[in-house]
Length: 141
Length: 141
Image (tube, rainbow over all chains, first blue to last red; front, side, top):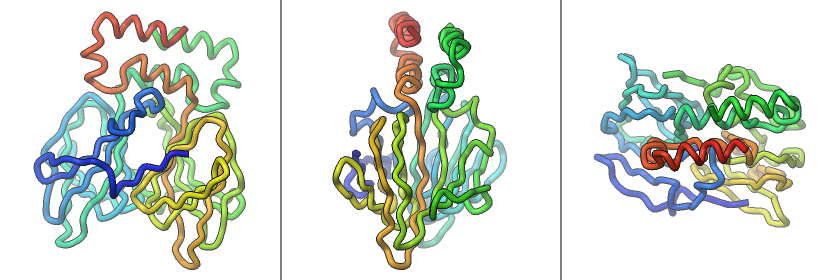
């Protein structure tokens, strides 16, 4: 078991946002995604971001007001939000005093397709049999 | 942007643990992993679990006392822990009053290998060029 303590991670500033990327942990051969924590101070917003990776985020503390596709949606602590490939987004912290802290994973669409074809969970691999092996080869073409 | 509210997710009991699996959201073609939330009540423990999937968890609230490989490690809210493929584990909540709430992702080792070969992030794909395409084919064999 490996432990990743958020309060001792190396981080850097992106605008007002404090970002701790998981590249520091050397998990490039283990994870089927990239990951980071980030913190948005009270009454602040992230720079607008837009990238081809899907992005799934978990709100750990505070409330994320996620601006994307012309809407702002409040996401409470414990809840998650998924941004599409290429979906521009700004993360606002509209609280006057509560920091917003988020854990995020992101991945390219073709990485997900390849992982799914290879079998993401045990049942997918066992259940698939010969069909699954064929799917793996199809997924790579 | 899709919003997944933890407090309205469908869940079921596994021992004393309340489990909300993400299969309910129909993201099987989008995520390179499976996911779930789970809650361990105060002074309670999960059943022992052991599976071939890697498992990366984020503690959202409370403190997880993770028993694995002969050790118990306390993981604070905001921090993460990664269990190896095949590493037996029990999650204890040793608090007398604070519920433990966790978001977990899990994936088979070969799914990660396939995702990595396909390029997990934009830079991996752009930087790889022809070598990357070859790596994708190698990863599927």
